[in-house]
Structures are given as C-alpha cells and as structure tokens.
Image (cartoon, rainbow, N blue to C red; front, side):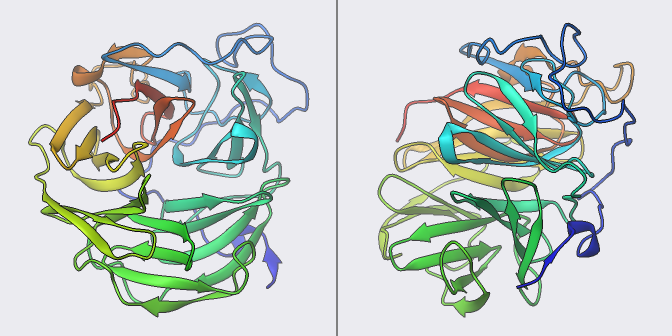
Length: 346
C-alpha cells in the first residue's frame, strides 16, 4: 500500500455548495492565547451542556482553519466534515482543506494534526473508524483510506465500484466477524488485517434498502427509509420497527451514531438547513432543528454559539458522535462543531 498526499488522490469539492475559503495567519507551533478568535490561553475543559440548547464547541463565526493549538470554545475551524471518537478519549475531526485532521481532548485542547499534509476529499467523508494509530475513512465516492493520527499522512486502501445507491450516508463497523462497510444500500467486508486493510469484497446486505447503520449496545442498528432494523453482532435480525422522518427534520440522512442503547442519533441535512433526531424502537424525536439565518453578517457567520435547539441555526450537519456524555455534531456550512444534551438511551 502506497502512502500518498491526500490531494494527489482526491481534490476538495464540497457536497452541495462550497462555503468561502478562509485566509488566516500562518501556521504556528505555539498555543494561541488571549483572543476570542483563537481561544483562551489555557484549557478550561469543555463547555457545559445545557438541556434544550445547541451550543458551539469549535468555530468562531469565521472561515479560517484551525491551524495551531487552541482551547475551546471559540477556536477557528473551517468546514468540519467528519467526527469520530478516538484513542485517549479524544474527539477526532476532519476540516476541509489543507489543515484537515484535528483532535480535541476532554480538557478542551484543540490540536491540528495534518500540518502540511492535505486531507481533502472529492466527496465529503461519510464515516470513519478510529484505531490506535490511524483513522479509517469512507468517502462519498466510495474511496477508502487510512489517515495516520500522528501526522495526517494518507494511505490509499481501495475505491468501491459503482455508486452508493440510496442517499449519502455510510458506516464502517468493526464486528467479531470482520470489519464491514455500509455504503448506501451496498455492503462490503474489508480484507486484510483490521488495523491495515488491503481491499474490500462485496457482502450480502443484512437489510435491504439500508440508508445508514451504526454500532449499538447490542450489535448494529440499520435505518431504511421506513424502518429501524436491529441486528446482533453477527448481523442477524433481532427486531424491526417502523420509523418516519419527522417533518421538521429537513433534507436527507447524512450520518448516524449509536445512542448507547439500541437507538440512533441521526443527522439530516439539506442546503442551509438540518436536524438532529433520536430514533428508537418507540419512534423519532427531534433534538435540534433549524436553518442558517440569512441576515447574519458576514454571510458565513451562523450566529450559533448558543441557540434554542428546536429553533437553531443548523446549516449542513454532516456527522454526529456521542462523546463525553454529549451529542457532538459537525456543521460544515456553519464552520462549527456543536453540542447537545445526550437523550436517554433506548
């Protein structure tokens, strides 16, 4: 497997619309201090989660990338596309552009990793699985690769043939029987060692018409257009429940993560609007919904530092994870990572 710069593999194009590229100061090695643009001078922990509020962890209303060590909240951030939970209780993220890979520690330290290694994708990444040393990523065009967590270097694994079929969501699932990739309605198994896969082979879909899947406490939950299907760790069906996407959850499903039980935290998105929904066997509950305000200045500032979750300023939530007992969401068009209270698990 040949290590390459990511830009040699994939050029940066946003999924539906590209926000303005930000400038910013030259990268530096020292922590930023004392300004609201780059965060405070020492880590002070994560902001408290408030019930019914959608609050910002990363981002400051601008478009400059996170390029140097900063402390939440009010750090720079440019178009975050993907979140994952990593080793050491860290949050791992990808922002669009050269300074792609970053981490956030539980004490609130935000650290760019990529340096001069570009982590840009022709299609936004759909899903990731973090290991001890690398992040395995599935992109929207079917490209699968590994990003080194130490320096952001990219190693190409394979590209799935065809198209995802249904929607724009996917998953990488580490199970006792192997590592599975769900890409729209198609399923694949990765070949080679789990920490260094060499390719992918087609697998029989455990559920027809899958839109997105995620690990749960009991195995795997798969969302279709009309059902929440629960599987055990061998991908055998153990339950099937109807679901309907709520009317106030605009757009299509872009991501899902387990809620700690048998349910899912699901992100939906359309141009300049989105929602976060809790899907359980009992139904669907909207946790946050909203749209990017049109009268903000500059136009890239979503004024989303602290909003009513059900009247929020979501614009394009592309990824969601449960981290540090909270729901964390990457909103690409609002250049923000946001947090919500974690609902009771199903």
